[in-house]
Length: 103
Length: 103
DNA sequence: CATCTATTTGGCTAAATAGCCAAATAGATG
DNA sequence: CATCTATTTGGCTATTTAGCCAAATAGATG
Image 1 (cartoon, each protein chain N blue to C red):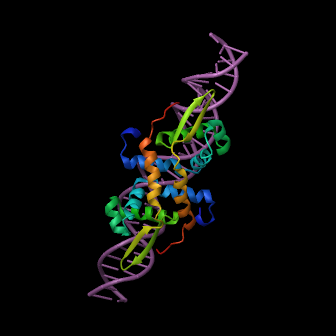
Image 2 (image 1 turned 135 degrees about the vertical axis):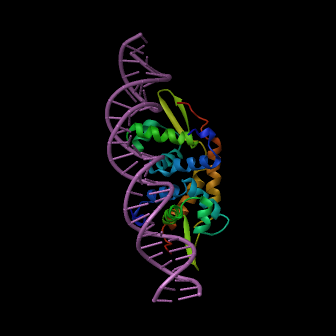
Image 3 (image 1 turned 30 degrees about the vertical axis):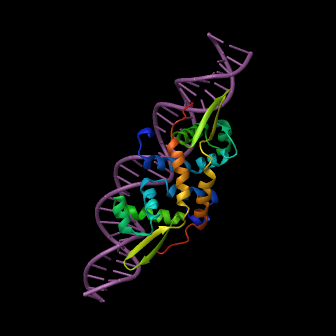
């Protein structure tokens, strides 16, 4: 399913999904400190490098990350500086979590 | 995996995941206009009511929704008014989408 | 140009998620 | 209290996603 022909709603979901996996969220949070190369991110996440690469591809295709090749390495960075406010909302919700069980 | 004993990172991911599915995102967007009951949301989403109910349970357990029983109906509402800024960031990213394919 | 390094891609298996139907539950109402 | 309505739960199948390994690729370097 090519993202270029996706509906606005599908693209929104793809962006959110790109941040919904624990490893991918960790990657995004780490990139708030500046760009990192794939091998740095592999250390960070602690998974096979091919797994990390696939996470990065998914995030890039969703529009969340940019990448740039310099020398031997490929450096990934956040496509938008709004991640902070995104996470501020997430944390507000995550703190409350599970309190309401009326049903 | 009980959410009460989850790490902060797991709870964050659960919140984001709760908004990452197209039907669930639609539900959340609709609730920005005020609370709705399960049968309203069933119409909106157009899936089996049991499917909708499971989406709602997941969102509630993640902390994204609250619910309240009144009369025969159960009304769901957003647990936090920050969804607007959350989506503002998502849309910034969703617009850019897929532009960068250096690799 | 042969080789080395960093990264991606293909292919596979295991695990998680989504959706439907049928059955159970809880509370309202006659 | 029998029944009705709204919703949830259980159980199942199909689809999607995650992760590993091995192989391919792209560009840098001797």
